[in-house]
Amino acid sequence: WGDRLGRRGTLVTLALLSSLGALAFALTTSFALLAPLVFLGMLNAMGTDRSAAFALEQAMVPALVTDRHRTWALAWYNLVQDGGGALGALVAGLPFLLHHWLRLDIMAGYRAVFFGIAGANALACHVYLLLSDAVEVTPPQALRRQAAAGPIRPGQLRLRLPHRRPGRLLVLPALRRL
Image (cartoon, rainbow, N blue to C red; front, side, top):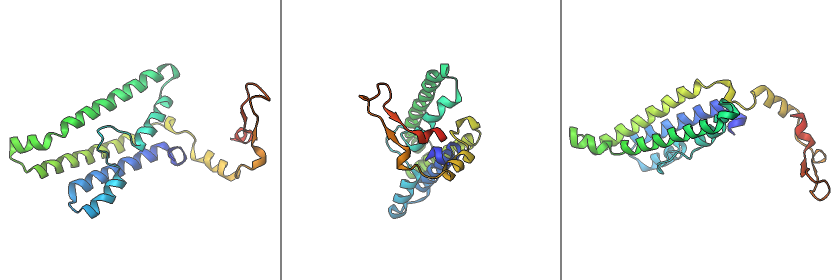
């Protein structure tokens, strides 16, 4: 869906939803209200980012660099991602430190952490807005042209089995018009 709706817009939407999910944790004590907000906010308790934003970012990184630097860019992306996960693990101890140092209530410390998560997601939203057009697969005009061309009819698809023509497994003439 990210390619159909636009990658940048999808990332902004996902960051806003994540921010709302963190705000729900910070402000709500009712489980009945919290459960759907956390689901929609895509809060992840696994300690790693395996969300829709992660998959979309992984698809975007190669578009931002040359083929020669693709592996390097993906390696740095994953290094920063894992470093953020390690930093998040340290921040998980912040409520206890605030309780010990400032005699702050543990729940107030957790609220502070979730407000921080909401702020980080809001910051990510702003960063996503600064991405270049190179991250988009197809401009919206091209998608409208594809939709106007109509659906692919069964007669346009042909399957050629390998034993009939070596080296040509599948021919899709309908893809030529894209």
